[in-house]
Amino acid sequence: MRVALFVTCVNDTLFPGTGQAVVTLLRRLGCDVDFPTAQTCCGQMHLNTGYLAEGRRLARHFADVFAGYDAVVVPSGSCAAMVREQYPKLARAASGGHGGHETGGGPVPSGAAGGYEPRAGEPAPPAGESAEAGPRVYELSEFLLDVLGAEDVGAYFPHRVTYHPTCHSLRGLRLGDRPLRLLERVRGLELVPLPESEECCGFGGTFAVKNPAVSAAMCADKVRNIMDTGAEVVCATDNSCLMHIGGTLRRQRTGVRTMHLAEILAATEDPAGTAAAGAARGVAEDVATTAGEDGAATRDDGATTGEDGR
Image (cartoon, rainbow, N blue to C red):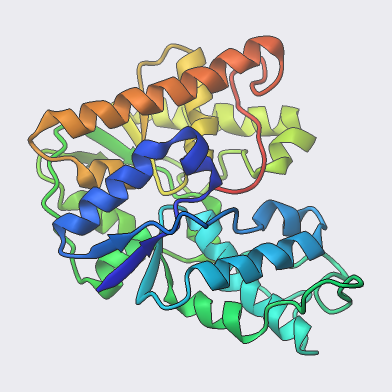
């Protein structure tokens, strides 16, 4: 099976170990994995903040870059939801259909998709191309279970882990128990339930920038529940949310680590790969935490802020 990795902006710039873990894991399971170097942003933060023309151009580019693959795997519930849920709405709007207020993956901004007109000289918005790309796009746990049928991926991770279901994976993609089923089959791993797990961590991309006090309070609640589990590691499918949570965990010197689902599933009894991924993640979270000392990316209680785009 010819598979493409869409790594996403946050992973590419701050958590490259996650993309490497996805490739390691999928190759271990017999997939031929490509990384198209022309890939860019999915356009989520543009569309969510009203820059529709820019978002449409990125959607068209995504469709062009990933055309021809059997599947596109995304280690992010947020960006997978963007492509799967919002791109078809853009395509329907471009062809004169409705698409401004439908449910699933978050609405297109009010008055946006249905009333969009291309600027002078701008290429026509994506129609069939991006709409067709959507069904081939899978969040990692969906691809492993629904396409490959691989519940036991041969992972080994001897640690106490709790799982945070991020909002887009929970409410947009409706991943359900897929990540939990994968974690339960990891040898050596002790999976402990997270109290009030379905509560948002407070990141929300630009929400954390526009509402920093509310965002920080929400993250403080999430960290309190994580600490109650006694877990060594908190896992999720979106690194943006883990960055937000991790900033608070590290600032409070809790000793609890954050790890993307892909990094745990890629881990084996050879400690080298796991150690490298952990070191890279630590550097990224140090940047997020240190930035808070200047008031740029972290509030006083350690909650990180940033843009949309997991």
